[in-house]
Image 1 (cartoon, rainbow, N blue to C red):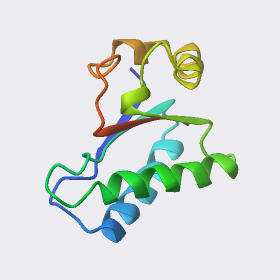
Image 2: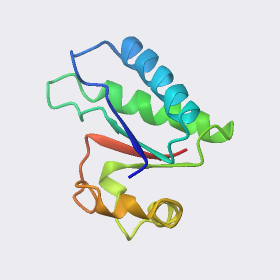
Image 3: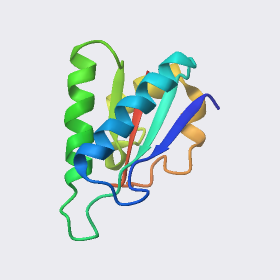
Image 4: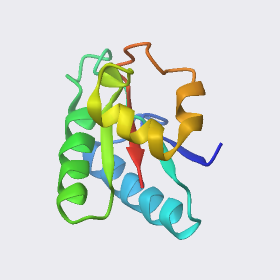
Length: 113
């Protein structure tokens, strides 16, 4: 599978540090010509309210507007019933074999590069 994976919750970073880590991971994944990226950001169960998750999705929305990423799907929407997810699966069929496909995992976001 041509999937780059990054765990942003590792080490419990601040939102700012997680953003820096994500920005570097996105550059690396694109430079290495990965088709897709899986971002593990957690969903706020530690009591911090999911600030990293919200920041990741805001960041990706901006990157999509800039045509830096083609598509992204929240983990809870990573199902065959979501149009954006179907687009991602069409472009990268291996994503349908990901362990989180159709599991409603709020702690991840999938990205089509």
